[in-house]
Length: 366
Image (cartoon, rainbow, N blue to C red; front, side):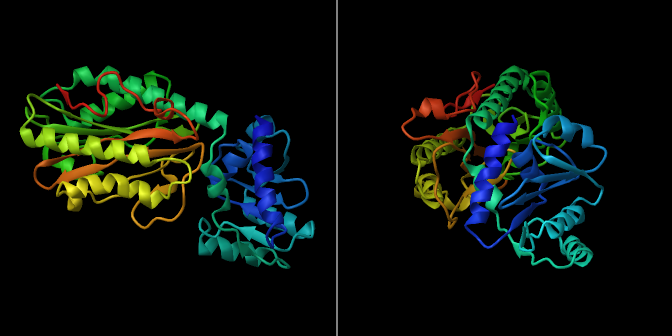
């Protein structure tokens, strides 16, 4: 897909042309992949405001770069950053913008001491901002990741029972995602049962499920480099009244958040739409994290939906909506779906994470 990556680089060029930089040095490996298609543990990209881009990587990835990035000039070097900075100097591109949020002080010192005559300046999170709005190819990859996630959950859910441990269920889900076509899990699966459900990012343990437990399962598949994110909460045996009430409240809050997620909506207002539902029920202090986040080549990327967060949503921005209510010592509920914000699209087409075993509005009793 060289034309897709070339179009992305042109969007970056337009930003450079409007600023005070002669070129951008891209060192975030995720951003290099976004702009070139190369997945690597050691690569960087020089994008001149006017001129041909240069991709640098070491010999381990040279053949992959030749295959996947044939439209780019390739430089093979172990020291990718200094090699590209030297290229900028040789080409007469002294005003070199770099990703200050990603580069360490040690790497910056090495970069500037190795190559003189440069005038480095922060680029800012320009590429991350470009990545927020997804093209059709990206949305298709994300949709497939979500489809795999839902299929894996549906396959494993009927097997959940008393005596199974949190770790065992996490392994079952991750295995099911791989079997369904995932490259790997998008992140370490969270399984939180009973009182552990009050910990939003609980690490699965050897705790065995018992009748009456609510179990929160946060999982996702990675496919084509794109990350799915979904959370479901189920209960073993007949639910108690407080569990039904807590689940219904989380479901109502999620629907309010999804309903507010429209193009041009302020991300803080989307968060407030869900948070107010929970607060009005007296559980405002039990919802401690943001409502959601962007997803794509990273599991957590811009935009971030939370109180006081800046920015607005736009057409074709994938986000999660994941309100949670956590009661220390008792348990908790979180319901999460990945959706794509769209102009004029039906809500059903926006939702990417789906399961047949359980829907976000219904508490699954096992």
